[in-house]
Image (spheres, rainbow, N blue to C red):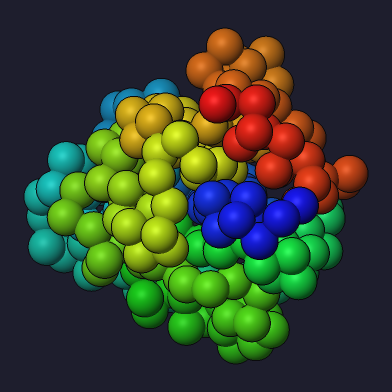
Length: 221
């Protein structure tokens, strides 16, 4: 891998369900709220809102200010209790990308307040990537590609030289709309449901290397 090739490769990672094995906790949380206090009448509400920012969820589904304050309190409680365990192989892969000089960023719909809780549980995370972009950094939410286009811009990548790692339907759609090569993680949705939407599907990061990422970029040209 030559220095010029390294510069042409950028890797963007969603956080929940991609770097951190937390997505099932959020799904259960939102499903409970949807069936309970909020009474949305929407089946599998957690799946419906996956990949969207809290602001977007509020705007679309939760107009009542009291409900919003209740949800914010409950989310804070949930996120303070999380261990934020890594998806298998994620931290090892991020370290390898850093050592290889390949620019990386976490691009998440989570807000900065949530990521502060993550840093308390995983203080090493900031050293594993070059940037962490949160919902405050974007004007539009997934499935709009704005967040990934911003990630490319920040790291000096282009759609042709960027690989996006995502797990949710909204996130995968955003990655594809950005023009990047999209690798789906079968951590949140069944492999067969996301396979037609992605360029590639993996169960976790076992066996993923900087060299494989570079091969993907070379093969796109």
